Length: 274
Image (cartoon, rainbow, N blue to C red; front, side, top):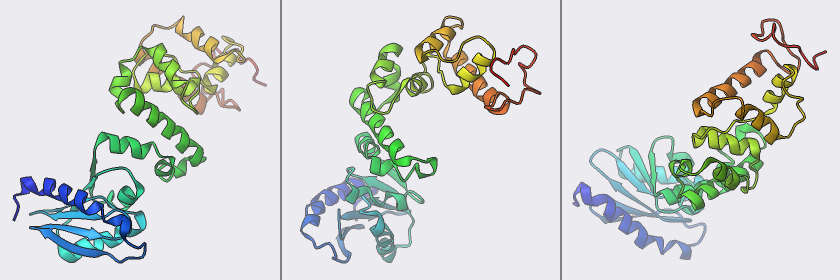
């Protein structure tokens, strides 16, 4: 029986070896379970083949095939052992190797190289089901995929590397990513990279036009410059300032304003408010 320290490398080696066979199998082939060495097994079926190791306390699985096959994989493993499946290793990002992650994620820690994660998240098809509840999820998935692709290509998938970029240069790069406009780019620069760029949104225009400090129809860059010339260039301040604007707009300064109880009621000239 192989020692635990050697079990996962052996399992990975076995998975690479058996992976070559799956392209020659018919789509309707049933699962075939084959013991390899010690407590290491191969599971052949439609799509990428699966390897698993039964350890002293838990099961380690390599790849998860397609989503519709994942429950069958779990059942096959349970026919060998009653030990829990605690770890799933993704060898690469193709759908016939990671499609079952949606099933395994409920009970197993999923492990993969950073590049596997980056490539998976760069696929709109992988992102869309995760954000379905957000509405217009297909459009958002394409935009998120474009950003993840950008992050992977430019900064190796590392936000901390992106944070080391000069803020205005980072903003310029972000604006070249499909689906990212000024507000989104500035949010990424401020909240993710931690650089002090002021974020302008519709709430900002609504509140400060009613206060008479801006007209409200200025360009995004002009409104941003208005604030950045008047406030200390501090990330924490910009972060909190924008949060305060959002809170005020949602609670009091709504499209139909609730001026009673607004903390700025006594100061506000209520420009444009009927």
